[in-house]
Each structure stands twice: as C-alpha cells, then as structure tokens.
Image 1 (cartoon, rainbow, N blue to C red):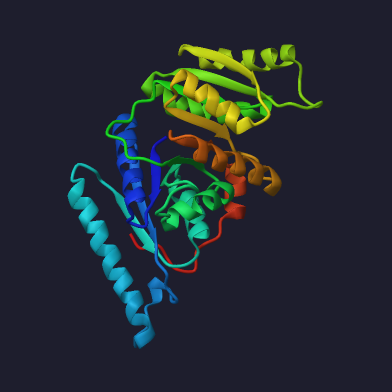
Image 2 (cartoon, rainbow, N blue to C red; image 1 turned 90 degrees about the horizontal axis):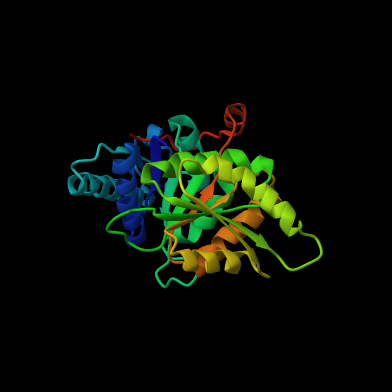
Length: 293
C-alpha cells in the first residue's frame, strides 16, 4: 500500500485517525492524502464574480479549511501531505479521489454508535464502508504507537476471499504479526461441517507463510460476538473482514457486521475492499465541485 487517504472534518477523532495514518505511513513508506468536503453551493473551480451575502459563510469555510490544513502541515513538518478540498457529495468525492489518485487505504476516526461526540465522519463511517470501493480502516481511540502483533482475519475462507486475504497480508507483513484466521459457525441448519471448515482454512494457512498463523473455529449465535471473543482471547491489535462484494445487499450485511464489531470492540477494524480497473472507469463519478490541491 503506497497511498493512504484520510478524510477529515478537523474533529478530535479525525485527528486520531491522522496520527494513526502517519504511524502506518512512516512504517510502510506510504504517502498520505488529506481531504476535506466543504458544504458549498457553487463550484470551487468557477467562483462567482459577485459574491452574494448567502455565500459569505461558504467563503469563511474555505478560509477556515485552508487555515486548518496549514496548521496540520506545521504540526507534522516531516510529512509531505497531498492536500485537497472540495464541495459536493462526500461519498462521490471520496470515490472519485480514490480512483484518480490510486488510493489503497482509507483511514477514518469514529466514536461508534455509543460515542457521545459524533463527528461528521463518525456518523458517516458506515456509509463510506458500504459505498466506497477501497479498503477502510476505522479507529475509535488515539494511539501513541501502531504495532500489529496479533491480527484477526475473519472470513468464510472460500476461494473468492483469497484476493482480499492477499491484500491483508501485503499490508501487514511489514509488522511481522501472528495471523489469527477466524471462522464463526453460527447456530442453525445451514452451515458447513467442522471438517469442511478445517479444509477451507487450511488453504489460507499456506498463504500466511512465512509468518505465524493460528486457526480459530468457534460456534456462536452471533458472528460479531464470536469474533470479538477471539479478539479478546488473543489480545488482537486489529480485526479484518473482506468487503469486496459489489452486490448492495452483501455490502449492507458486511457493513452492518463492521458496525456491530466497532461497537463491541475498541481495536481498529479493517474492511478490505478492492475494485477492478475496468470497473473503476465505469463507476467513477466526477464530483460537482473540483478538487483543489
């Protein structure tokens, strides 16, 4: 991963996400892109010649945005940020930025549903996970140091999950962690046998090499509670799930699982997604307000 996007509303939790992203970027030698979505009624590329009184507050937004970005650059002088802001729809703009800049990972700060101070990004985190074609990592708390020693990959371990797992390994191999492959057997009639699950997970064990790998198969009536139980047991630093499905219902289900995990767990949650090049050109939607860099 070479390009990390941190959407920011300049809130406290967005600052935590930026600190986290910087830690990762320095470790894996990635570039950080900062993006802010302004609430504007006109295109930044075609600023009105005569500004009406209703636009004064929007001009103030731009002024404050530029001030905040300058403050960030002064706070982290060792970082070479690529900085952009625009008006328009947050999701459309993030998708456009991802596809035009080759973003590999989006990092968001969120308080989760139980948080008292929900910021704009905190309340939109699930919408981003469900609608953005890129891996998304959400964090709830500040971290002085980022070190992934034990990481969980929860999956059904079918063949179609392998590409997402390769992305997961490529990202985390720099930290030399122990991989914990987790399969949750839900109560009910329709689930594979224990022997089938062992066969499925064994294929992924091979791809973990040369890193350490452990397999956990747990029966639980809740996927989220089962994953969280294993996470606590192994003292995990990160939980990851695949979210590469394009079907809206599938993405909603995974998004819901990520949301529930974020409420149960205090550690970062990684939703792994990728899109094929030919689909990116088709699905890319240029935002109404042009990005300013």
